Image (cartoon, rainbow over all chains, first blue to last red; front, side, top):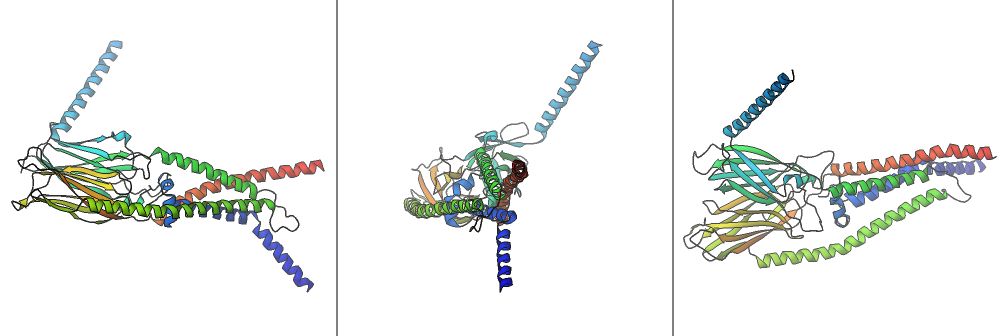
Amino acid sequence: MRTASMTSGSLQQQAVRWTLSVPVQATLFTSLCALTLWTVYFSTYPAAHNQTHSLRHHTLSVSCH
Amino acid sequence: MAKIKLVSLLSLVGLLGALGYGSVGRSQAVQPSVQLATEPPISQLLPFEADAEQLQKPVQLRLQALDATGKPLQNANIQIKLLTPPENPWLPTDFPIVEGTKLLDLAAIATQGQLQFQQMLPIRGEYQLQVEVTPTVANAFSPFQQTLTLPVAENSIKYRNFAILVVILLGVGFGGGWVIGGKQELQPGEIAPQRVRLLLSGTIVVAIAALLVVNISAELSHSHEHSHEHKHGDEAIAALPSSLNTQGLEVKLLGHHHATVGEPAELVVQAIDTKAGKPATDVVFDIKAKSLEAGWVAFAHQATPNNQGEFTWQQQFFDGAPHQVEVEVAPKPNAARQFAPFKVAQEIEVEGIEPPLRSRLLGLGYFVSILLVGLGLGLWVQQRRQPRSQLDSKALN
């Protein structure tokens, strides 16, 4: 019983350590920023496209339509 | 010695001058040519700016066919093909579907060797204007072809906005790297360090706020936009018919009523003298293709019909929004038959094509790379700070 709880505890600690490690945090942060950038500049979803249409046409390297 | 040098220099200048004169004279004597003039001048040309604050005007292009002696060619038939700049795989324009396509194709009878038209140029880059000049009277002169180039610089606003975005991305990346790379210590009862939780929460709140603003205002403007579109369309159709029989003339606007961005649409305007039952050739067609949403003119040309009473042209509608082709029919100034000018019009539905996934992913790749540079800088600065602060704390102990 004791060994089992110690194993689950260490696993939890490992998971927390891994989640909070710099590479995972940096990946999460970059992914969230990339998703926001995609929605604002590149999404073809009509609502997002129409709303950011002018910004897209006024920024170099962004293709609109 | 100085005199010899001076004489040699003068001889050289004289020789170069004679060679230059010879080459100019020879090029003029051998080949007829086409001269291109634009308004605004070529050095000031800018591409179409979508959602511009002020109504944009198309570029006016004037072609003059000249004979070998530099005089205007009489009774010429000028055919032009205007091609958009080639595809730019590493830095696409805002209309990538338009890159490397045909924008305009028309042929006109130029009695004084002059052809004039207005065209909105959609993207930056070097346009090609292929011109073919043939005589309307057999053997009046030898037909010839010439390709002219039309360089269009990018709008400076795009560079400015890109620079602002680069600064923002570097700042956001640096801030993220600074926080993530900082001391990661768990307080009792916490599942993540406070700083990381703050960073993630802050970024998520910004993302949610951005998506909310985008979606709510998009919903509001979408319904607003739809009512405008219907209004424009109804007015255009109700006010101007696509064919009209009046004052002894029947004028029809034929061709494609549905166009796709990237592909030229063929349009024909035809005038028939209903009294004589023959094609009418003593009229002038004043053609204008306008955007129905914003009112800017995409193409304009004053054309005269051929022997069949027709004028045919191909034009690409580069903006995926409804357009209207409007033709004002007026008598030629010196024609025997004079009549009150009238208009016909046709609404053109233009299907927009979404940009290729590759060009969008490329753009995202650039932005994320800049963000990663900032992130790397933030992490690097924190890494350099930490050993020092650890040493400082050790020294204090």
